[in-house]
Image (cartoon, rainbow, N blue to C red):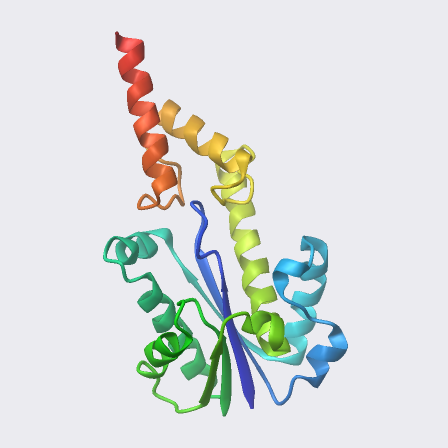
Length: 214
């Protein structure tokens, strides 16, 4: 049995990190299904493929909340956090071979981080852009992305206004974050407080309030 592991949401300022692992006997059914790296598919296509992948394979998912991400980021341990979650999902599946998308610039270092946390002993293939090269990792990326997108939409419903993708480069996300903090004095739910984008928005809000007082 083979599995692929990938994440969605490492970089956004809003919302959780989602890691998914997908396992099946071989990747031929995934090739026939036409899975690709989730970033190369639109949301509608990902939503179509996700349930099909779940029919073909065993799937494990872990959603990492922003509080945990902030704790690890402040300690400069974000790569270790991902390695822990990757290893946990691989152990749940117990594959003979695991393909993982390396989040560390050094592929060997990240492979060692994961293997050192494993109980089972699969053959590990740890590469950059594994989500492009291996359909089983592409499938994991699709599952992770659809779960994260759903979480972002739930947050949008909670706050009652558009929040965009949750990424700092998204003007809608930045505008929402700055408006919320300026109005409420604290970041909105599901915000990564350790992110520079959040700290900058908080600083702008403080300066704005001081200017208003003057």
